[in-house]
Length: 77
Image 1 (tube, one colour):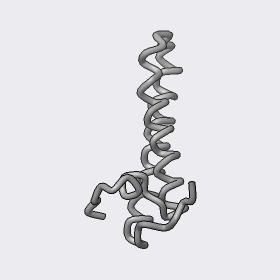
Image 2: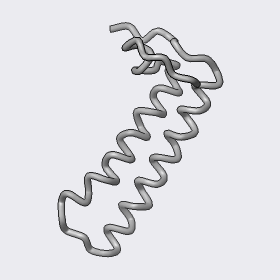
Image 3: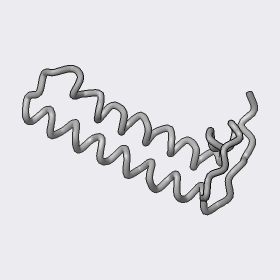
């Protein structure tokens, strides 16, 4: 699969910015869970999803490739 650039500079900046926000929020939530000594594994899906989604959004912003657009969906940004 070839990752062709399918978003413009504004879309790249948007995905990069919100990807970084997702990573930061995920790490903060992880820190709160560690300090609260939460041992329930399902609760850890929240920060894992935030960090994973943030990393993927940063990848989209860095590469200029959007998975939704690659699948044929129109995105407003």
